[in-house]
Image (cartoon, rainbow, N blue to C red; front, side, top):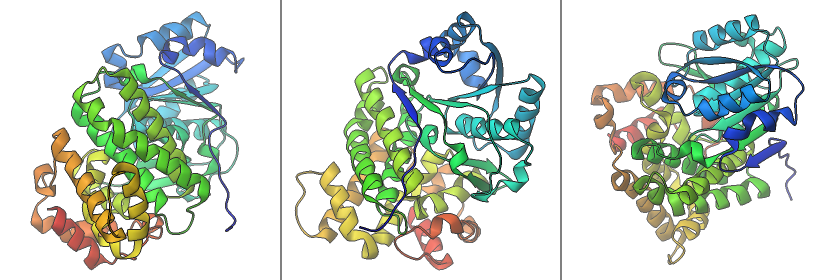
Length: 384
């Protein structure tokens, strides 16, 4: 067997209603008193956080809420949040929200735990020094950020950079499906497809694919494909929501160890330039990247096809085609956009997007097939 290393979060709680017991859950683990809750303004103002905040107060936590997080958080938002938390003397960081809130929470825990500038952290393995205790609580079933060692920051007008380090793994991840009830169908579909992409790309990752990441990817894809439409059709289906949340976490554990590839690389310019949500950006290019990869990865796609289309038959190529058709059907079935033109992309933008995608060398190196700028342009053209 090829040697491999597998890392993940040390402590995971899966419990509907856990957020309403957050204060006591944390008090069992920590003796500190000053806590920073990192979230976004919508969640803060919607009332969704009230049970968690009440529980924290009852357990004698002094809470400072940072709710300035926005999608694809810019660097200045991270630094401002760190200043706010530093002035409050924060001792424990909790990320509660979507992937952006959890990504910011990771960086706050490091920035508050030491004196390394954020500018020195970008890249793989560049984080130095300690961090504060870190707890992650997702409110969408998509990014898997609660169990990944990755934080993505918007560092320019249209560019994103990643901080990748084992130091970013949280101490505790809490999965409370009640927090995801009522999530609109559009967001449910986009984030759910994002999680499916994590599983698919981890399973086909060129360099670090391993038996543990494979096992998690397969189970994740089984849960996600079996519950996505249910969750979209009935936002109050707790069983479907919990299956989606668990599937997204398993996919997160998988791609944290066997990294994602060209789907994400080509999705980043869509999000960065046109401010399209990350999950939707992935969905728009997913079937087209898989068709491009098929000559190099059909045997792996065929194995995944057996998970989502268990009665499928035929050659690897036939099963791959069936998998791609299935994945391409999810967007129209859930009502989300299916083409780049629907999200504001012009045909004249495709060349610039291809050039930007080629800058994602960290991701493209994991793809089962080499991608050139012309390949990226052709994939965007197919998605247009």
